[in-house]
Image (cartoon, rainbow, N blue to C red; front, side):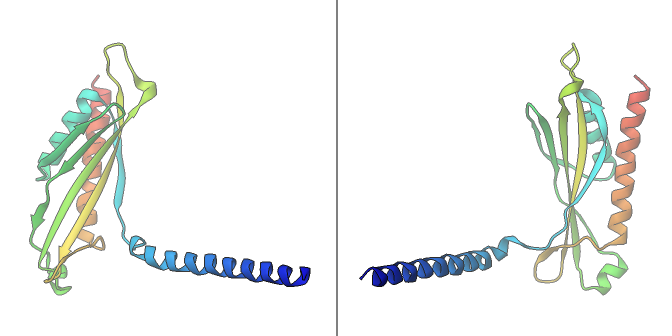
Length: 171
């Protein structure tokens, strides 16, 4: 009698283990939609105090034809998002079948807690994220394999870095 109960317990345990493994494999495949392979272009753009950080962001973004769409100042960070800058494709992009390109820049300024000064100022470490989409005739898709985009992004980063470096030396 004891051996029958023992076998039943083992059989139930085996079913439970198989059920758990099966559930985990189903869960993994159902979450595969969240595992999209995409690249987000993020870059360090420099460090600035409260005043020159915000002034620099506005100045550089405007210089490159971006308009600020959203601005949020929180206690530990500042967040700036531009509207979409839409442009016609370059010749090599037309060859790939792209009809339109749109780019957005997002700036995150993280407060450096050790930088607080007596006049309520502090410094931000600035990070720039670039979102680039191309229209392929049916839908917009994320696309970063573009030399023109890379050159523009590098130039924007250099402009931000130069602005913040120059502001440090003039104070």
